[in-house]
Length: 136
Image 1 (cartoon, one colour):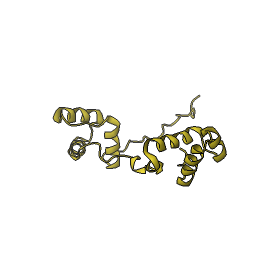
Image 2 (cartoon, one colour):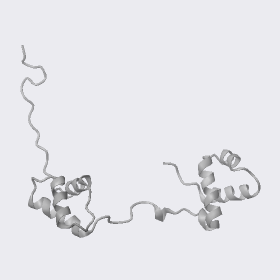
Image 3 (cartoon, helix red, strand yellow):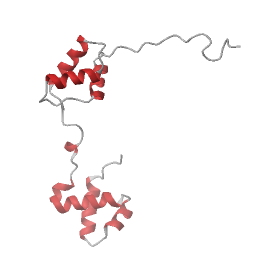
């Protein structure tokens, strides 16, 4: 992912374009992509000088996507039935909480793994002669 264009360069882009220079020549001169320069100009047209500031507040997640009730219920079901997989637990959650947003199977698996509720996979010792050893 590219880096944000510094605020000083954003002001240069606006000033030079208002002075009659094309966005393409500005992008070549300052060394930024044409689409990035065009985006800066568009944000300036729509929002004025305020639109030139970075909007990092819009980045990243917005917090919990599922209620704490669903997280607790899923983990409780996994603790109660450690042999059950995420698909079965998801099905039980959907039956019990039909109006709630239910996470995907992969999300449930991630929850179980981070909370160490997922049993370790058994590893089996290698069999004798498994790699062509001992065969005639």
